[in-house]
Image (cartoon, rainbow, N blue to C red; front, top):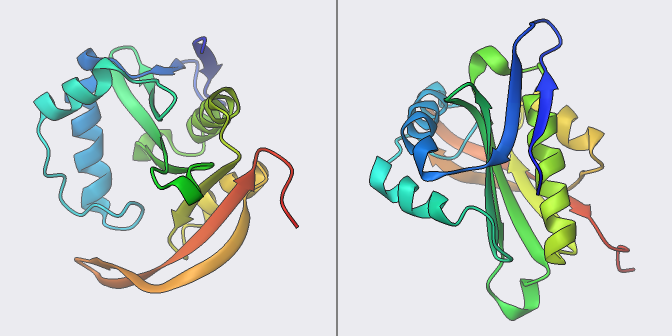
Length: 181
């Protein structure tokens, strides 16, 4: 996949979306900790893996099984998206997305650029359906996913047990192939 550049709507600074590399591991982990600390947008409350783990993961950032993309401002990761194909034979056609964006970069096109990369990867990898979960009340993320055609498919009640208590998860899906009847 080629690199894509976008200019933030309210800023002259540009960011680049590209496959993650081992050099991104430290600032990726910094971002992960910041977003986790918010306690509202991602499942993780406390990232437990170290920089070495992410360096290893990012050595092969894009394969037919998974992809890790980052949005960077210079050398700093400001957004990240991972997409992983299901292993089980009956769900092998599905891949799950997880995404995070730095608070200061939200609403500036980073999420859209990352979603475009995930959808392109899914089509290239032969994935038929992308899925994700979003917390109720995360209206900006819900709107972003809907903009790309994701539809609500259900809700898991109290599925996440976080520091702030139990949280529902809204399940959303996007068919990249023709949706079965």
